[in-house]
Structures are given as C-alpha cells and as structure tokens.
Image (cartoon, rainbow, N blue to C red):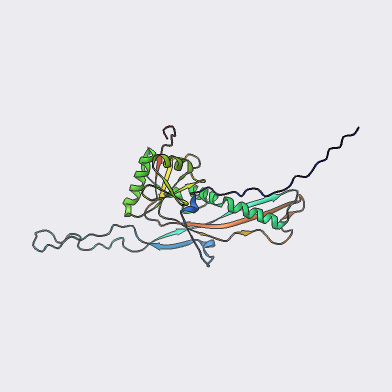
Length: 278
C-alpha cells in the first residue's frame, strides 16, 4: 500500500515591526527642517554666543584711596561671536533577495523599513566612534583621569560642565551605564526623555559604549540634527537586477548632520559599572 502525505504551503503573514530602543539619541535632539539641500554636500557653519564670564562692577566709592571702582574699565576681550561647523554623513540600508521573490517596489520598501528601524542606532555608533561623524563625542576632554563611582562621576560631570558658563547640556552614555545610573544616581524618565535628578537630559544610546567605553559619560551642549528625506535606489524596472545570478538589490538612504556649539567644551568622565551592589 502506498501512503500519500498531503502538505500545505505555509501561510505568509506580517511580522512585528522593529521598534528603536527608548531614550536614544532622537529623544533628546531637535530636528531642523530646511528647504535648502546644500548642507548635504558642504556641511554647515553657524555663529553662537562666546564662552566668557560676564563682567561685574562694584559700587562707586569716590572717597576711598583705592585704585577706583572695581570692575572698571569694562573688559571687552573674547566678547565677539564664536562659530562652529558640522559635516554630513549618509546612513544606508541594503536589501538583497535571491532567488527573486519580490518586485523592485517590494525590495525598496523592505530597504526603507530596514533604514527606519536601524538609523538611530547607526547614527549613535557614528557619533560615539567619530566615524564618519564630525563633530563627534571623541572630541570631549576628561574632567579627571580617575575612574569614579557612578554617582560621583555624574555629579562631577554635571558640576564641571555647568561651571564653564552655567548652561544646560546633554549627557551621553551606554544603556548599560544608564541602567546603573537609574539605580545609583536617581535618573528618571519624563515622557520619552531620561533626565538626571537636576533635570539634565540623558541619551541612553544603543550605539554608545562600544569597545572599552562602557563606563564613559560624555556631556555636550544641546544637539540639533538635519536629516534628509529617505531616498532609494533606481525606480526603473530591472536596473538593480543581476541577471547573471537572478539577484535583486535595493538600497534606502538618508543623509544626516549633527551639530552643537564648540563651547561650552564637551567633557567626559569614566565610571565603574560593577553591578553587585545595585
């Protein structure tokens, strides 16, 4: 007797979307809209306030034997406008399917979905490692050469940064470091943002903390981002079909530029991330 096994093709359904991790770079930056695309080729430059202490003038005293009123004459050194620059870079998402089971339109849609799901992580990696982003977090200078406890490191970093001109900044750290700081330094979430007990925004980047920098906290001035619309590979049928192998290709891209003022100076501290006492 011959046994016949009946098989049914698997039903193709839609999977769950990939959601970027919360409290990442895009949660604490301002996206700027522009109709002028020239920044994508040559970068940008801008003026900002200088980093100098304001002057103080004492009470006039005409009867004293002193050299005159304290704070006079008024000091105008380093009081002119300062400037900063930033350069663009492009994030791309490749898609290949073989044998061909998709239309070119399907391939472009998959590439675009991949781009949107992973662009925050990829931009964080570029910003942290300085490749190819400029400026980058590698430009920060150390507050101290010591490796500090999480609480001490955060306190010293906030104090040192604010001590330059008293302005607010943004802290960048790995998600590992952020988890420790939530427990040991009272980081809290306010909506989709993570902040310190003093209200300083914190970016817990999935792309931060690569290699040996898991314990690094970097503090910069507030950031702004220019980013282009997404653009994809050729819309012409067959342009990206390799007929020799029957492979279909697609690429989705987006150009980014991240900037912040050159002053106050970006600073960093290194912290211990032992978790046994959390």
